[in-house]
Amino acid sequence: MSRLGRRQRLALTLATTVACLFAAAASASIFQSPDGLFTVEFPGAPKLWVADGRTARGTGFEERRWSVATKDGYFSVTAFVYAKPQKTDFDAAASAAAAGARGRVVAVEPIRQGEVDGREIAIDCGASGFLRERIMSVGGVFYVVLFQGADATSAKAAAVDEFLISFEAAG
Image 1 (tube, rainbow, N blue to C red):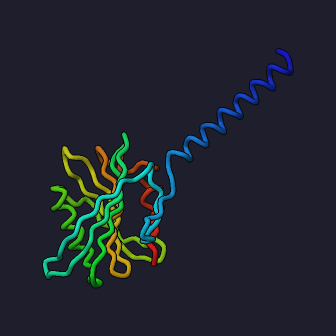
Image 2: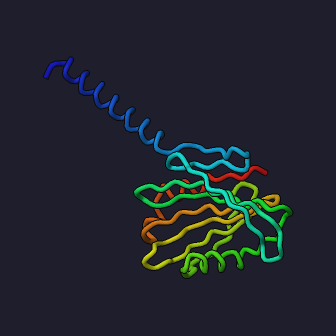
Image 3: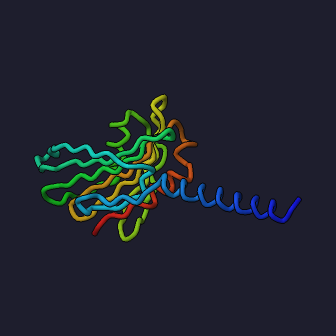
């Protein structure tokens, strides 16, 4: 084989590798919420959904949910922005998350993400799939960083770890 042929193969291999790296980088992007509440690495462009609500004690809040659905699952960050700061009971929040998802809590672990304490919760929702979420509270905002996939295996994927770990609340 000629020297030119080897160089062409090397150039083609290098170009293919670089293209694959750019494609992988383009599939996930750092998102900063327009209100400056957080940054996270979503696996695509998120859509925003907003609703107003009240706690059982009457405190008003706005629920802001950014989400992306992919072939691998559903990724979201929800910020509950309260009119006045709320005391966070992580155990009650884990139970409420399972009840809301009609699932069963299989694990609750304390986490420290940046300077923020919280919990990571795994919820088995049976035929509806598996949830893995991180909850934390910062200055009157309660965050739920969530992945929903087909099963526990999908929730342990590297892309899910990267998404959950990439979350950073503004403080």
